[in-house]
Image (cartoon, rainbow, N blue to C red; front, side, top):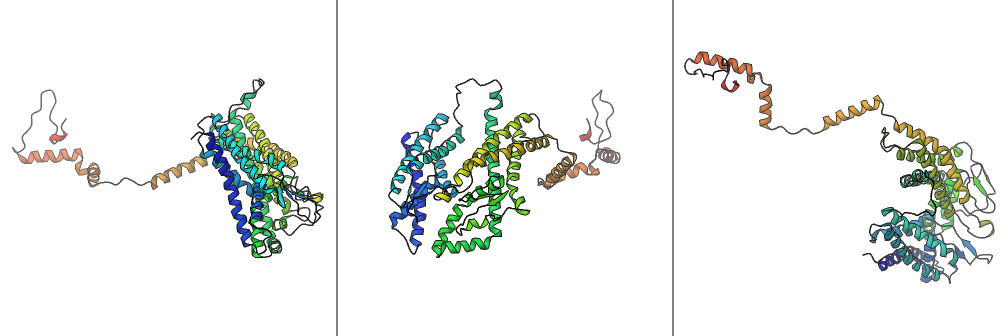
Amino acid sequence: MRHPLRWFLEGLLAAGLGLGALAALVLVLWTLSPYPDSGAGGALRIAADLWLLAHGTELLRADTLHGTPAPVGLTPLLLCALPGWLLLRAVRVVDWGTEPAGATRAALWITGGYLLAGAVAVLHTLPAPIDARPLSAAWHLPVFALACTLAGAWSAVGPPALRLPFRPPPGLPAAFDRRRVLAAARVAAGGTAAYCAAGALLVAGGLVLHAHAAQDGLGELGGEWSGRLAVLLLTLALVPNAAVWAAAYGLGPGFTLGAGSAVAPLGVGGEPELPPFPLFAVLPSQTPQGPSLWAAALVPAAGVAATAWCAARAAVPVRGERVTASGWQGTALTVLLAACGTGAALGCLAALAGGPLGTGGLAEFGPDGLLVAPAAAGWTAVLGTPLALALRARRLRRPRWLRQWITARATRAAARLRPRPRRTAARRTAEAGRTDPWHATGARRTRWAALRKTSGALVPEIPRPPGHGPPPDGPPGDRP
């Protein structure tokens, strides 16, 4: 049903499902806790705080040791997956037709319903020790909801056509056409995923090498088994953040742990006293050397290789075919556009993965997105462009004789393994008759001539019509 009210209700439903899932988890932990600080109402406020924090909203903790309210702006990226998936689901279950304008209207109505539930959640958290900042929620919630709904709608029908207020140069539309922009977006997504995956590998390797310290920190912070479960869930929610931090570390800018500290491949200095959180066990305590430095170089190598490979496949869709392939200028332009997209994506992820955890020394915590974005774009553009051109040239080459020989052998082997049709008795008899010399034409004629000589008058001579020559020495079936 194409109705704005249906779209609005889908946005309310998406927000309610997200709040309900987090509320169920928080209530379970509150029930298992041996020393709950507040009642069920306080637990529900914490669930609303977590839901708002998943959208990037900054919280304010009023109950501190020094009496000054401390902001909490570090967003667990794993929590962002739940509201993002629910918004995408809300967009895909409604019917908006086949036009981009209808998809955009549906996304806006769904966002409106979602924001109504978000406003109620903000009002619910205000009278609490930990509440949401209304100004932060006023722009984080709309941006997050619009990004998810418009992405889901436009991925199905495409974005609406943009009308430029100025007349572009003649060569600009051909260079930045729709196909190249979409290809650059896909290449940027692949490069961003490769950077984050390499960062996740660095975190996993660090946890394996410092598993004992991480386990000690889990027991020291958790205390009872219910507390350990809460710390473990928080650790899992912050694992994507750690992957982005490791990617920023491998790219060069690194990150900060507050109080003027800096953790980067070129140096580690001013590390403050940190709580024994399990993920803090993977932090380097000194300037990396040898294997540690090579492990950090895995991040740019993985991102550049993935970007170049995706760009080469987009430039040459069919290997060895030049008709559908793009030129080297178009391939280089695609890599440059993808580098800009990768830098923007990693910069936003770095800004979202960090944030303040207090005032003073903890006001800056995590990577700086303004430094990570140009670093990622620079690595991708400088090293990814020549590598993509080299891979494009390799894909344009015809397969060599060895590859052709292997392909031919594989084809013959597949033909031998293919099941043969079952031969019937009549077919076997016919095949035997074609190959048996007893049924050959010469043998039949010889037997017929011998039978006619020994039969006397039993086999009379059959006269032939005039003009057909002498009769052949053979049976009637062999005569023309």
